[in-house]
Image (cartoon, rainbow, N blue to C red; front, top):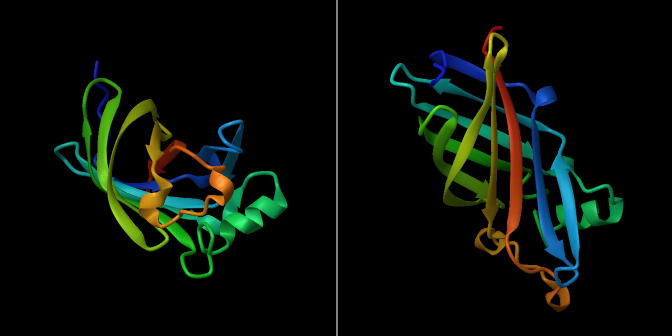
Length: 171
């Protein structure tokens, strides 16, 4: 059974949403995990059921529970938050695949570099209070100019996981 999502404007609820990342380092022996603590966004669902919107992350809010590493991640070696304080995902289209699957296409911008991004999200819940989308996808950090890799310690793709709670605007 496919649950209908109401048309109109939706607002991201940052207190009920998470965006996290993980990446292998130390030659694949250690997984660094972090989460962005400042998230914003919103979108619109059209009468045909498709959706558009934007999710924005405050890069300086990335917390890996290691202050020295977090400071390095904010530097020009990585995210360069002085020049590029936000990561954005601009949703160009979101279409239902089945009862809880959603194909999302858009543009991911990191360090001022934009690349097309397609992912599959799961409609984890729809209730009177709103809806929650969950997704996990990988990103090649080199495509966004994040190439720092001392002694070859960092390999592979970065995995991004998100649980995004949206409520009706004005609710």
